[in-house]
Length: 125
Length: 225
Image 1 (cartoon, each protein chain N blue to C red):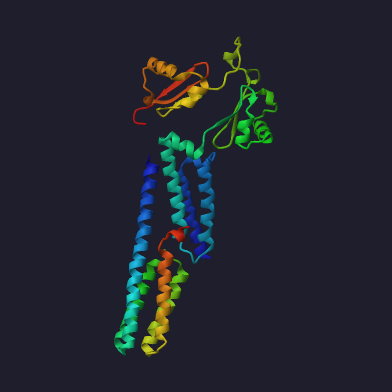
Image 2: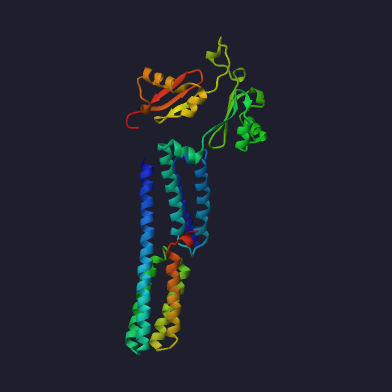
């Protein structure tokens, strides 16, 4: 009986952990995506100080997320996003127009990251 | 290199814990579901050791999930005879009264070669010596020899008579198996009479076996079991 109870507890913890991870990824990617929009908006309005600050904030948030997420998610996918965010910071500081392309790439990578961690019938099958 | 080493150590601990959680049954004869879990675990465990970019948790989660599901299934099987039958099937008789039940062997996809191989493993070399054979749920075949070929015991001295089929389980964990009662040709009425004589209700019987001659054994449930 103890084994069954232990198994039920472990299974419940695993299920809770898995769905909590999905919820965390969804809310975090929403936030990060919003931050990238703010960077693009600030760059368009020629507010370089706001753009640089927002880019650095984005980098800080992403680094904080990857510190623990590397334990759970594929490291390769996270590294691609880290590289795109580093480009955004660099282009924001240089006031380079390439920032739009970097933002679009980062948005696409984040959308893919989110999609790959959200369960759906098609992915399960 | 160090990462692979440490991952292997962690997975060794997780798998050892998992097999411990599955219990001693896992180390003996495997039931179909246990065989599936064992094969899957060995495959899943190798992936995170080889792929260092993959998080360890991707190996640990499925292993623990499979083991926990297997333990929970075992728990349900313990409580429900129907579920147990659905999951692991039931033993099937392939030789009864010295006669090979060919249709049953066909149904189980057992060939004569399989039968002879199983006989030889148990030091039986002549089919005519076998009175009764049953295919267990693990696929192993158990044999009962005819009386003339069984090793003599003290009670056999001065005792004649023919070989009877071995006793069958008619109550397990408080649940009557009507199929066995029918095969033994004993009937519900006989069972009620025996239970009344022993002053026990079927719910309080842990195990009751009987042979076709009506010779029975009753083991009552222990309190708190």
